[in-house]
Image 1: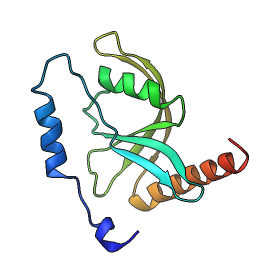
Image 2: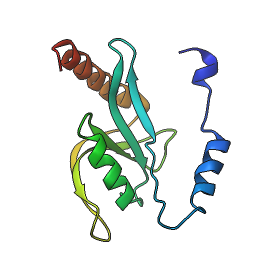
Image 3: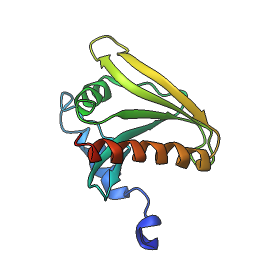
Image 4: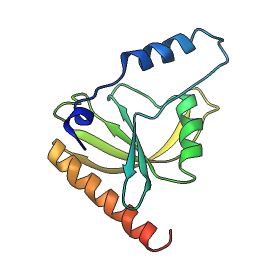
Length: 138
C-alpha cells in the first residue's frame, strides 16, 4: 500500500451523503460496514469488521446486514473506546434476530488485544486462515 492510500481517512462527502440519505424517507433503512478486509493474493474478502464503542449496540439494520454477510464470510465486532491506542475486544457475530427492540445478537468472544501490534497479530492469523481455506478450494 502506498503512502497516499495509507494516509486516507474517511470521506466527509461520503458521511454527508449517508446523513442526507436519512432524510429521504423514514422507512429507507441503510447500514454500512466499517471495514472490509481484502486479500490481494488470493483475491477476495477475508472478513467484515464493524467498530463499536463500549456503549454502542448492534442495531436492527446491522443485524439484517450481518445475517446476509455471514453467509459468505465471517463478521467481527471490534469494541473499544480508544481507536488510536486500544485495547480492543474482538467478538465474532454468529447471528441475530432483528425483530425485538433491542435486537438479539449471538456474539462469540474471541479475545481482547491491548495494542495495535496485538491486533495485527490477530488479523495476520485471520488472513492466514483465509489463504489456507481458499487454497484448499474453499
